[in-house]
Amino acid sequence: MRTGVRLGIDVGKVRIGVSRSDPHGMIATPVETVARSEDTADRRRIADIVTELGVFEIIVGLPLALSGARTASTEDAVAFAEALDAELDVPVRLVDERLSTVSAHSALRASGKNSKSARPVVDQVAATIILQHALDAERASGRPPGQPVESSIGP
Image (cartoon, rainbow, N blue to C red; front, top):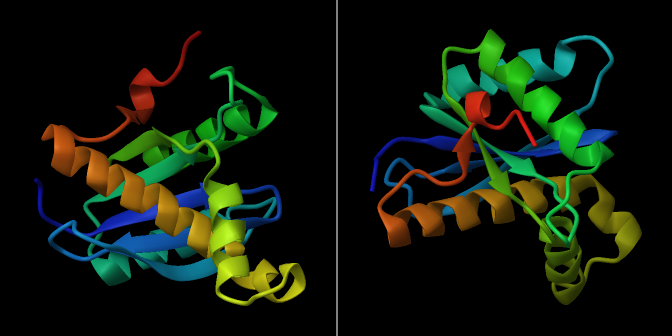
């Protein structure tokens, strides 16, 4: 298992959930929710978090349809990951995130939060689920999870 802090990202149309791992890559925890912006303010905030935490790798959730097909949300997440990869000196990987937001809503409901009170944190919880899945996959396989951004383009 590689050591170092990783950042988990759940890209949404309105908000971006951000989570982080501990330096040993054992557990993911929520960091914050970043407002999605038309300009580069959202990516600048993520760049600041990368610097503040000493992140060595970014894991971006890849929202595929249940069938595995790419969707408009897939293309949006890939474009965001490519922009991060081009702007930051940190590798970016894409990891399948099917059902992470559904799991996040379920976890928040189980903790007693209703949909309205959960809205500000659901993206952070989804990012935490994505990152924890990536950490667990790497620990089980001994290989980095998902795929690097540069190899994600294609059919």
